[in-house]
Length: 267
Image (cartoon, rainbow, N blue to C red; front, side, top):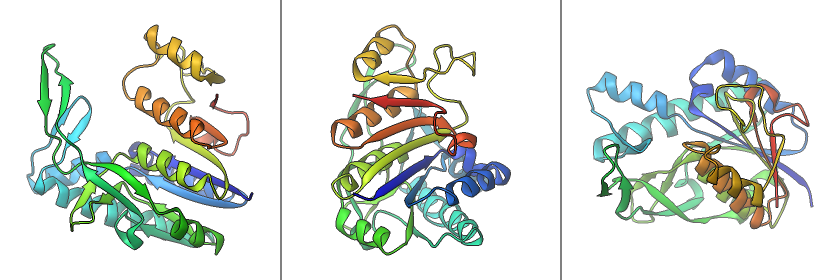
């Protein structure tokens, strides 16, 4: 099977033109087929503030009411996505910016009520609003585009097949897309952000754990080393590996062109 590299880039990298340009230059030099998934939560928060639309975050996740859905659709699917596409074109990459609604690429359903442990220790049922949990990624259409030399740039938006866009976690979009395409390509999934990888000590950027197996991941969670936002990232990663994705790497955005950088995950 042909090689496909899927790179997911977080909102902090997207926000800075310098860091984004650096990342896209390295991304453009990746050999073979490639696909980019981006976030943009901080940009959406700033736009909401400018428009006077209050935001609610619970457990680090955005509650997406009707007004916020309009903001994230505008920011993720428009401002951020098309800015990345335009920059990639300057680097000789034939990029195509897409949401999950385009070409019916990613179908999802509105997240049901979730029980969440609040800051005061109580457990409450939370309605996250227009947030999507993925049902299906259309691997045939996406794979055909990639085989024709197109580089898809996926924003963190899906749709419910009933006319509504849904705000969807970009890490999950990356892992579900990787799983869907693993039947057609030899997929390498890279999560890149500001840290050098999964850290043994959150205060020491050099304490990168070079490799983690699924059993070691369980131990790291039990010991409290892996927590917060890294927890769902690793859960998504091991789900992808279990479903046939060849390689998952968590690394610094500056190091995606360094073969042994970051944390490499395996069964």
